[in-house]
Image (cartoon, rainbow, N blue to C red; front, side):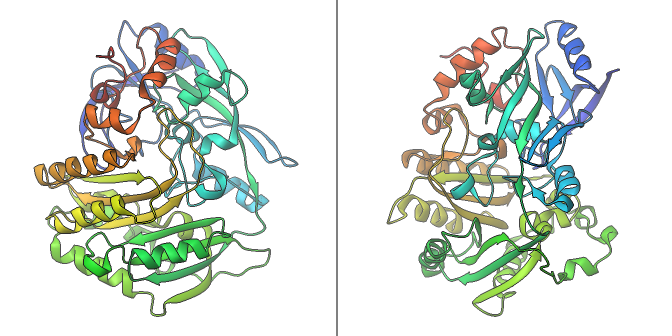
Amino acid sequence: MSTTVTQQLEGWGRYPRISAECVRAGSRRDLQDAIASRDGKPMLARGMGRAYGDAALLSSGITLLTERLDRILGFDADTGWLRCEAGVSIAEIVRIFLPRGFFPPVVPGTRFVSVGGALASDIHGKNHHVAGTWSSHVRNVELLKSTGEIVVCDADHESELFRATAGGQGLTGIILSMEIRLIRVESPAVEMESIRVRNLEEFFEASDAASDWPYSVGWINGLAKGNSLGRGIFMAGRHAPAGTRVKKGPLALIPRRFLSGRLLQSNLLLNGLTARMFNAAYYRKQLRRNIRRNVGVYPYFFPLDAVHRWNLMYGNRGFFQYQYVVPPDPEHRALRQTLSEISNSRTLPVLGVIKEFGPEQHGGLSFPTPGVTVALDFPNQGDRSLSLFSRLDDIVADAGGRVYLTKDARLGRDAFRRMYPDWERWKVVRDAADPDGVFQSDLSRRLGLTDAVD
């Protein structure tokens, strides 16, 4: 039986914050009943709440809390196909199936994401160049429409609806379940090579040399300037063979009760001095330029998960993550321009990653396109932050790039339409699936995705 509560909700970036009318559903029948009794109110499904901005927020309407729809429904060990409800988390899949020799085909930087949210964001990981996005590895997606009807879609059935749902931010319907094809692995260890790179040229040299590694990503210092633009550490990885032993890192020695962002929660903690100190220390923690070692899957794939609620470290004001992708360019002009704009501003990019995407793209609102993606976390500095992001939007849009909607909290409607030229075609499919405009979010209203086209 579902229950209705009024609850304070926020994105992972803690901005914005809203008061929402929520229905906590425990079954698909609860969801169907909520749709039937909505009394004209718009609705939105919310999983684990790891969207950074307002993609999983609905200020006036009914938020359907779906984390209790978390049953494993079946698994074929011969093929790796897993069937489960949409509320099952990647963390749960790893916990259950890694000891059995299986791993999710694509994982983001946190394991605390539901599979429904993974499809709604069409998540990518460190292996996009070889594996594409989450939607490349799922089938038989059950979608609850605003009429109460349940339809099944994937790349071969109701394919337009499936493509609109992949990356569609939950606006085509409520994802109830799906099948995911897990990959086989021989151990819970990852062989990792990390290379200290002094600038963008060295990053791309390392990335090109690691093209045969299935996973790759770089940490990047967003404060670096001039000849040091793009300075960071490049990390390639692959699943290790059976019997590989892993040496525990220093965080494993710290009691978990002390690994909490709540202990360091302060608006004064992050400033120009601490941001520069952190980036300098992170770069120099690797004493040799090139290191190979074996690590566990958790520190390689989900390093920030080691600190519980690390987002609290940004204080009550919260933070923004600006993630964008720009198309391939031998001279990397847009990439250099954006990084220079950031490093010359008075903002404080604290943590950043950089990666080359592969050729796969799905259209619609799915974020990954061929090129280079950068994601940087910025403490919320109000108008100073927003002004920088507006300048970056113009550079990214002019280059033919785009901003990741799942990480966004402030993109303007005009910039969005320049970045996502397929948006009108996507909206036609979405409106056909939900002609009464039942499924909405604060993001969809801000971007005009659930308004009439003007």
